[in-house]
Image 1 (cartoon, one colour):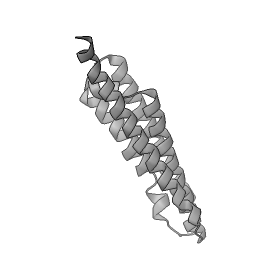
Image 2 (tube, one colour):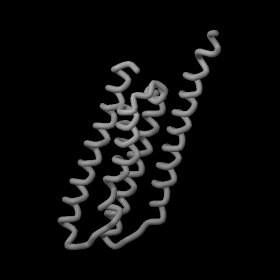
Image 3 (cartoon, helix red, strand yellow):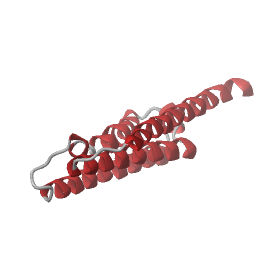
Image 4 (cartoon, helix red, strand yellow):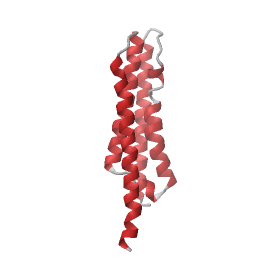
Length: 140
């Protein structure tokens, strides 16, 4: 595996880790001013960028698997980022609405779209991996 591949994955993983810490801090500050009202959406929103962004990228970088690094195409990484951002924003917004004591039926759009974007990212990773593994056999 090329050093730049692992460096790229480590860098992405660290960005997601920083985003996770930022979301945790923002959620903590928001809830400190909520007069004792708590929302699980707000408390656990940091887990989304941590589990769907930082962990997969850092594990792929640590594994040092060439196929995993090659799957890190720009389209797949962009779809992953969009999915994580959509789920995180939806969780924070749902938490804010819950703290205010209201609901909105349109909040179901965030998890649906976020999971659809993450599924598209997984498909892009899988298709990219299939092309990488098929390329050497076509040359021979």
